[in-house]
Each structure stands twice: as C-alpha cells, then as structure tokens.
Image (tube, rainbow, N blue to C red; front, side, top):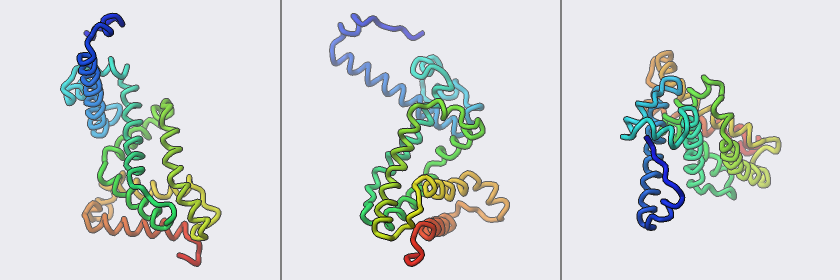
Length: 228
C-alpha cells in the first residue's frame, strides 16, 4: 500500500531527504514509463499487462496506479512521450531554414531513420490506430507537440517559397503527411511486404535505397518545375 505523508511531515524533512525522495519518485515513474513503452510496443494496448510492465520496471503494480492512475492513462502518457521524443530529436537537428532544399532533405532522412531506429514508435501507433485514436484524443499535450513539429516544417517551406524554390501552393500539413507516410508505411508493413515481394526490405542496402528514393520524391513534389 502506498502511504501518503501530511504537508507538515514533508516540510519537516531535511532538504537533502526531500531531494532524494523526489529523485526516487522521478526514477520510479521514468522506469515504469520506459517499461510500458516496451510492453505496449510488443503487445499493444489490449495485450499489455500491468504486471508485465511493473515486473520489467522492477517495481510494483500499485506504483503504476499511484503515478498514472490507470492503464489507459499510462498508455496516454506513453503516446505523449514517444511523440515528444520524436519532436525533441527533430529539434536537435538544428536544420537551417535559409537552405530550404537541404533542410527539407535532412528532415526527410531524419524521419525515415527515426522510424527505422525506433520501431516501438511505429508499433505503438499501430496499436492506437486499432483503437481509432481513442487515447490520443484524450491527451491535452499532443496538439501542442504537433503544432511545434509542423512549425519546423512550415519555416522551411516558407523560406523555400521566398527563394522561389518551392511551389507556392504547398502547405505544411500535406508535406508532413507525405514525409510521414513514405516512412511509416514501409516500416509498419515491412514483414508482409517482405513476404509478398520476396525480399527482406530491412536489408541495409534496401533501406538506403528507399531513403534516397523518398528524399527525391519529396523534393520533386515540393520544388518548382524549373528547379526539379
């Protein structure tokens, strides 16, 4: 059973003790969240069991309810985390909008490689789509994350339009969907596509070839005809 302490008890603790308790709480919550990402990526929301998550985190079932409230709220936190991590990794690229063609190509390559290197991102989204986005719609944090992500792309597109490199009719939403779909579909369907096409699509050479192909496809779609 998780015991709670009164405000007076908390204030009576020495700062070092309070700091240690806070770090322990943060570490426990973080461990549960990372374990949940692994379990939900493997088993989906429906198959992801609380006891598997707590065991993987070397914690207890009750701690999940203490920090997150329910399995559903834990899954929402997982969705927020994987999207936030994608955005933070994208922001760390430090793309230069003043070189819009190179910046857009860099964004395409980054997105493709992120999907390859983080298969948990793809499989968790597959699970959420099976639930028709029920959990994503409950999150108050996904919309701000998406706005920030689209803002990065919008800045690149606007600069490209200003330099007469990109078509004036482009909008960030459509280009984002193009980039995401070209990388996501390949990864989300890689097993069935590999079986259907008779070759392992995750071979390094084929991954490189697809990265080049989709980068070229996005640039051809966005560049004005004279610059394609």
